[in-house]
Every structure is written in structure tokens, then in C-alpha cells.
Length: 283
Image (tube, rainbow, N blue to C red):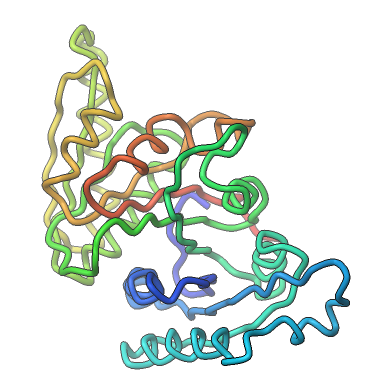
């Protein structure tokens, strides 16, 4: 989708109690601004020797999975957001999440990313790579870099691309909930031509128009640098959150996110949300 959904369902898979509240903070911001319902999901990975119908056999004895869902539900309800919870059994986490997107007709999916060092043929992580390739909805991948804090400024690298509009609107939705400023940053080569500079101004104008309905303050900045990801990463230290679109390339191996988005996501000083839009129309 090219635009951030209004209404509908936001699916939020959770598994880590240490980052649950920070992931839910973002989910609540989106849900409030876009009048969405949250479905909090925990996928239980059931080994092949156990039938899915008996998946409850692998649940923790202390009922940790349901306690995790209950805490997330309480957080959303305290914020005045409509929320449901689902415990789903599957052979692997990615299969369970993709199946839940389809079953609950989710318009958006917000997932957490640990940001571990890249392994060969794996960009963000085995299950996140599958979500990027297979999830039939808007996908927001959040790397939580710091404890929850009031958001005063959100950095949005402005480079165009198929997911740029969605990234800008997501930043606007979160900024509106916090009274934050959206800072648009464009990094260009030192030897850019005049038409390139005109294109940057046109892009800023387009993004500012997308942000108008959110009623947030917008600032713009252009820097000249030979290393795009490095310049963006340097700027992240001045903001509480960075939101950027995934690769402009097709979703091919090693290009699911793109070198700039992935590099910023791993090295940023703040929390980062990477955005990949879903299909234009849902069946």
C-alpha cells in the first residue's frame, strides 16, 4: 500500500518480554492516529514430532506466553486502544505470522528486530527476511535501540522510492501522537547536478504535503556526502527515532531491505523503523 491505512487491523507479533512495552508503544501510536485495532500475536514454534493440534504441550510451565500477551493487552487497553490477542501454533515463527496476517486480514504488521550481525544469505534474520518477502500487507520492522523515551524529533531520510511515502506517513502518525518534529534529510553526492538539486526540492515538497494532515512541524536538510548510510547514521544521534523505506530494488536475495536501510538500521544511535509497503489492493 502506498498510504498508511486508516482503520483496519495492525498485527503485532511479540516474543521478548524485555522489548514488549517499547514495541507496543509504537503499535499504540499507530493505532491511535489511524483508528486501528491491534491484534497481539504470539507464535508457538511446534517441533515436527508433535501434532499442531497438541501444540499446547510445548507451552512454558509458568504460562509465560499467555502472561506476555496479557501484559501487552493491558498496555493497549490502558492507552484506550482496541486490542485482541492470539496464541498461534505453527512449525516456524514466519509461517505462523504470515498465516495470521491472512487469517485476520491485517492491514499492517509491526515486528521487532534484534539487529544481530548479518550471517551469509540472511539480511535481517531468517524469519524477518521471510516476512519481507511474503507478508501481504504493510510491514514495519522496528529495531529498539534505547529505552522508551519521549519522542521530540523523528528523522526521515528522503530519497524517494516505492516505500518513501509510507515511511513519511508513518513518521507523521507517530509524531502527531508526541507533538514531535519530522526532520526530512536528503543526502546527495558532492558532484550533484542542478537537476538533481531541483528534484530534491520537489521531493521535500511532496513529503511536506503528505505530512500536512498530521499537523506536525516539518524541517528539511540537505547534506553532501559520499557515503549515504554514514551521513544518515551520523544524523541519528540528534533524534529519538528514524523511519526509512526499504530498498528501491525488487525483493531479490540480499536486496530485501537495501544496503542503506540495513546499514542505518544496524548502526543508528536511536531506534529505527524500516518500512516496506504491501500490495496496492488487498483481495
